[in-house]
Image (cartoon, rainbow, N blue to C red; front, side, top):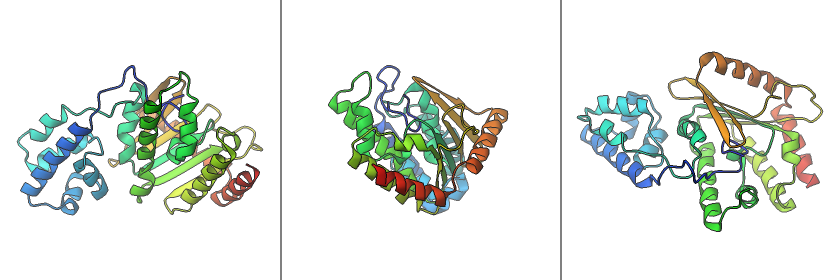
Length: 284
């Protein structure tokens, strides 16, 4: 499986790019220097380039890959003599991301709206460490201990957007069968369900369960991810085994938005979903 949501493989040695944390940190320092040269605080700089303060902070700390739009706007606002554009050419993404997932991984941390439908496993952003570790340990082909640990760290880092981006709207629709699948120990499964319930209590996160009693519904074609970025452009991502597709065509994205909207109506309400989650937790 891939990396998008409930996927197992966070690391794909072939086709992965070199470690980039140092280059991201260096770029962040350059942005910070030019921002301070312009006598701007992060709060003053953010609206001028059209990004949120948390995003600015993450980029300056070397924790986020800046978008092309951010680089271009920052270059103009900070009058950076072409330094930011030049530095951005040498940025690479973190090692271990499958090639097909890189585009989505770049967009995900900057999302203002993020929708996820999963019918295989608990979505990656909702996974606990114990649940994710089991997936990595059972991955085929097998991974070494170091690879498992690095993948686990990356997955947990991805999930931080759920708590760091309090203004981002998150919606998750999960098939009941995926929640009942005993992919880990009973203790780990109970912890996983409790974690989902707790996240669903946050005001910007909706969790809905697609019940097994629902026969035909709009998501039968497979997992679906939708995202709106800070420029209010929408993207979609669809994933299968060892492959994934980032979709930017507005007409196609519109069709997928319609399907997701129908699924939200066909799934249990958030309140009904909590009741079912508690029932599933008690059955593990």
